[in-house]
Amino acid sequence: MLRVVTPPTTPDPIDPAALGARLESLPGVDRIRAAASGLRAYLVGGAVRDLLLGRDRADLDVVVEGDVGELAARLGDEVLSHERFATAKVVLDRAEVDLATARAETYSRPGALPDVRPAGLGEDLARRDFTINAMAVPLHGEPELIDPHRGRFDLEAGTIRILHDRSFVDDPTRALRAARYEARFGFGVEDETERLAREADLSTVSEDRVEAELVRLAAEPSARRGFELLASWGLVPLADGAGALIDAVVELLGRPPWRGFADRRLCVGGRLVDGDV
Image (cartoon, rainbow, N blue to C red; front, side, top):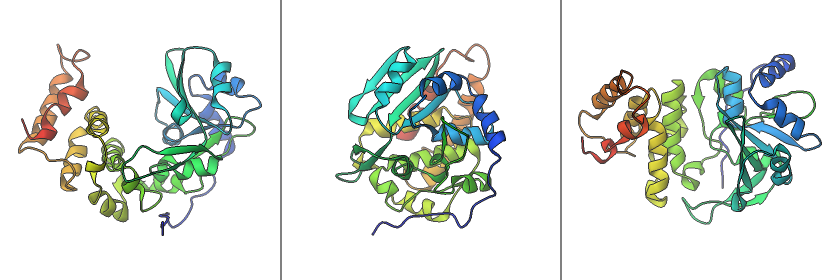
């Protein structure tokens, strides 16, 4: 039986006026709200997490209960659609907006790409990786924080927690993502989440998907912490001295002539995870 993993309590409600002000400050959100008139559209996931943290964000994630194509068409600009997952990417004033139909997911086997079906917002949030990424703010009506899994509690406590105990079985790359968030935010990984992360079987997913997550981790300012955490979990082997080498590469790329020229994702990632320093 699937066991839902939840934090023990909930913080005080967030002030709607403060939430609305934060929402309005996001670049492009005014155009999205105008285009979403009459639609059940929500800002979701990492965009809400970063909104609550007061962090700048270059892209937005929007979920629609219904046909996402209608919102994409209203927004106009350049649209890239992915029919299998009912998603679209729109470029607004050089900023990317990820659009998706609210959906539920099932997995035919561990590590498989999900089979999706249209669903309501509640099921969409329940399919996500961590509680801190399972929140939403409606783009219609009065602003409110929709937080069925008490992600704001974990956000304020600095905790990374999965939503259910088969999360890393369904998608083992989420364990790599946990290390990336730990490195980025300095959060702690909840005990049960860490135990299950150590059991993640990356062999059930393609090398391309694993590499994509490791490249994202390599782009983080605290990449060394993330790679060393994965090594401590037994998920990614690191060569002797790799941590110090990561720091040296990051420091070098922050100085001329390499600053702004070399791609840190590739320079830091390189062959470190292969044990070839």
